Length: 536
Image 1 (cartoon, rainbow, N blue to C red):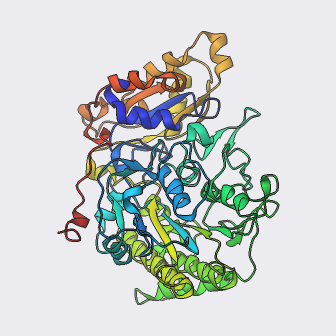
Image 2 (image 1 turned 90 degrees about the vertical axis):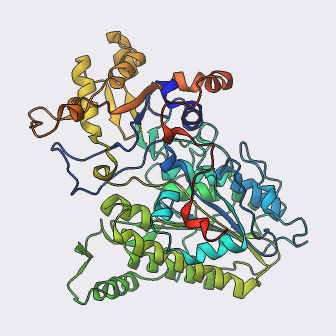
Image 3 (image 1 turned 180 degrees about the vertical axis):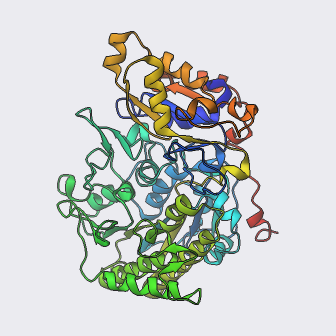
């Protein structure tokens, strides 16, 4: 199974595997197949929901854009393989930090040899959550501001997120630490905690204590004697790895962090560790943005494109929410001392709506186009505000993403597999409950119960490697309408024991070869039609 995946994919899996914290079985669905919680019935093309937890290229490929006239060259389009762990050491090089990234390297060809002698007053890193290349390519006209940054700065077209799975928590920590999960310790959104339980790696209350290495912001705070300002605007606790540990480290101060409580519909953060600013926009501002969006279709009926604008499960995926986060950015910039002295300040921004909406109505939906337009405007407004304060040569901006998305499987020939049914099938096959938790990319197993029963990780991997679509249907499901060739299709390209992946040597991984799937090639530059006109 590892040979079928090939060296690029297995390298990503190994970088993302954290012994004792990752699941015991790493799952790789066949290309374009999605694993999630879909319920027990067979889902057809009218269900747009997908997940994005695979190591295939369409989830791994993201832009890395560097912009800053005083520091970044204009026009280069390097096509060598790079990844998001290179962002932190590159910023560190520009600002004069002593930070050393465990894995990332400086993107030197992007930097002007005659760059400004003084470091930038502000560095801003903007992560388009779910804004990987396949999403941008699908909607090439919806990001003119970012395109202008590409035209006047440096774009790395052959960039990836660096590790798998392509999920927000580990990849944002890749960005902040310059390390892969095997070193920074955040393998997933959830993981096995030190007490053996399986829960969110930020411990459900925005606690970054499991982040095992420093971020660039942590190191810069210490180097500047806490005189540098550092802050984050994001959605969930999962983005805190971009910023760092706040006051948790010895002698550190509580950096500014602004997150969103989707239940109470208000900003929050763990104020034992971070600072939540005053003067953030109220819920009334969000309500007004939602009303404005409601009016765009000519009827003030509480709906946008058929979606209920009163539903908390819809709101964060709308252009109205993007505009609300833009208002929060304006408040941060107006009220915080960002760029007010000669010590470089660090601002990290996560824009969630494209990812959130992509889960609900898919990257193919016109809603995603509208969200990208709104996010692009927020990027433009933020850079304009920063430039007004510090001048065109006073800042460095980085735009990237944490993963791509999956088109509706009905359009790609993929399958839709229910993760809970997979877990139940494993338990049924082995005759005992050995699955403690299932996810789209791994299984957490009761290793002690397996040992007592004489079941090995290899036994579970072999079972899942032969798992067919018909096996994933709940007992009693009517499969008569589906052709035999669909029912007999394999679900997983590979199911690999985590310890097996973790102990592979570099030589053994190289010997795996390129693999059998085109989507497993993570080293060759991708064709990007959206940039052809820019660089023609």
